[in-house]
Length: 202
Image 1 (cartoon, rainbow, N blue to C red):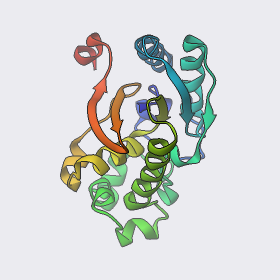
Image 2 (cartoon, one colour):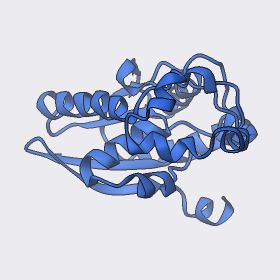
Image 3 (cartoon, rainbow, N blue to C red):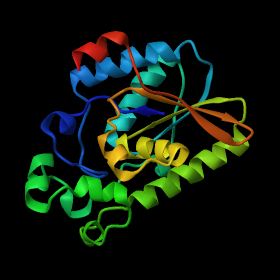
Image 4 (cartoon, helix red, strand yellow):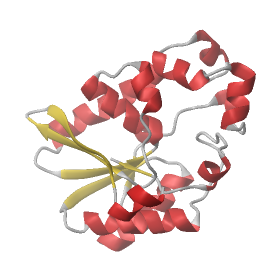
């Protein structure tokens, strides 16, 4: 699983969700190209991508470097943010308290009233995709290009993390989270895999 490269909303700390366009920054494009060079060593048979513009831009860079094509899969979508779209992270915390921690706790009624997709829903769609790939793509390397919370959902499915742990766990832009599947059982091999210089720069 690969998170999209740095996008404009990441720099401005604005929640844009699914439907507001936020393009990759120039630095984000370099992040993606850098990570894609690692992927050249791996025989990837399919690339599935979220329909959002920042993930599509990421997929296009990856596919150009790998000489591959991609397929859109809506199960990799960014979470639906409802009334929170367009708000700054700090503004949300000041106005509503730590809704982000509440999000990872489950079906919070306040978040649901704002039209925010529950983390349970995200986990269900990611679990559905992983189960499908486990049955249909055994012994293949599949790249899933997606967003922060779908990746956290996959990690949570495997490790059963509590809300505090999920909240504190940051997934870097254009980093790789590697899941290994054997006999339809997944294990976690790596999180935040990226070039060594980025660990010191970011």
